[in-house]
Length: 162
Image (tube, rainbow, N blue to C red):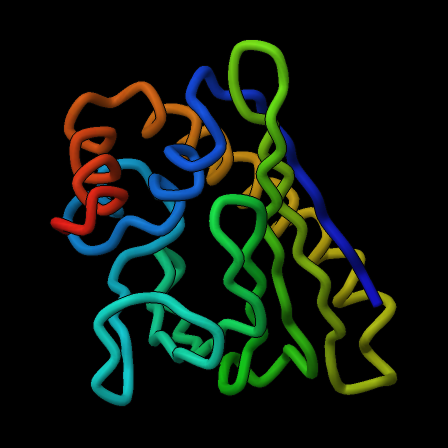
């Protein structure tokens, strides 16, 4: 299985960093360069273990994913349940740990491509493409952690007023 990872330290506490990472709608689109559209499925209105989301990437690809873990403020994990034909497996995890002056965020994606005969080449290419995407995405997250509009929305969510 192939893997890509990126990390950044942001100058906010873990609870707020986690809340930024879970923003939705227009606030999410302010900082997340990967997501073009995203919404909850099955009547859900908030993230939680077992909740599914539909995401359309800026590349135009669609994916349905399910939260397999949701443990504020430390980590969140998801796996693809439907998506592009070339992914046999796709999963991601985002971890948040306190450090002096803020939070260390480590984001990781693991994936397996298909068909099997093409997987070595596809995973090599996928590592490069997803590696660039995850770097851009975590840089956007860092920008979101400095954006007053995003921070205000994340604070409201923490207070239960999202």
